[in-house]
Amino acid sequence: MQITETRFKWQDTFDSFSSPLFSANISSAHFDPAPISSFPICFTPVQIMEAKIAPSMLSSDFANLASEAQRMLTFGADWLHMDIMDGCVQAHFVPNLTIGAPVIESLRKHTKAYLDCHLMVTNPLDYVDQLGKAGASGFTFHVEVTKDNWQELVKRIKSKGMRPGVALKPGTPVEDVYPLLEGVDPVEMVLVMTVEPGFGGQKFMPDMMNKVRTLREKYPKLDIEVDGGLGPSTIDVAAAAGANCIVAGSSVFGAPEPAQVISLLRTSVNKARTIC
Image 1 (cartoon, rainbow, N blue to C red):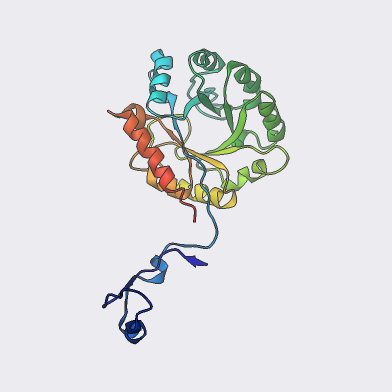
Image 2: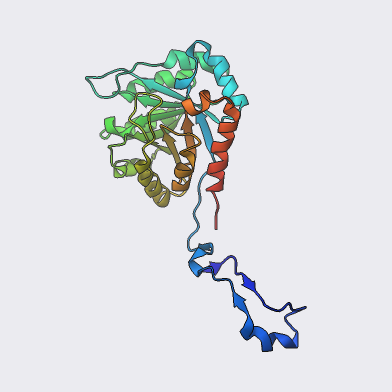
């Protein structure tokens, strides 16, 4: 154990510790009353991965998607978060219908950015080939619909040149993703939903940070993404828990100065990356 800082305040000023007065006056030394627990002590190294800020294009102007994407990248975004929903209410997932492979393909013609695709769909395997061909960079599927065939899905995603990730809804136990993070073909990112999937502009669920903390402790080098209600008022909580990939929609697109919000999100994550 190493105490990284020790502070003493002496009643007398000494020119050097070799002074003959040192031994005689050490008993009069006054110690700063701050308790030892307040000092930064590191028992085990903790590593939080590099910050990646991903504006959610669900909050953009879809009529000007290419220019909106370029605007976010100019403002400092690392990724562009693309929500793909199938509208299968009865089958399983979310009631909304958003974009698909044709939109990804069209956007790819205008940018080389990392397209972080989050699939809120009933059968993600059906989308792998078309999204790979369209130019998607990341393919994040939900654990709730892939508990039985995730190995095949991950292999297919990687074979198409995409990075596999797994997402979990607020009501899903974090333990459900453990098998997907271990073994021969693990996923490379976990997306913790901090709102119910399907709609933008919802209120952040702070209790989901327990999942983030658990994942960070168990998998120190894992990319952990959070999505839902992230902005200036909630980023510190998410960053402190260990999230490094931040999806933000209305808080960025609705801001007078989106670049300032993106910078603030990044700064908060980087502050939490202190390694003892």
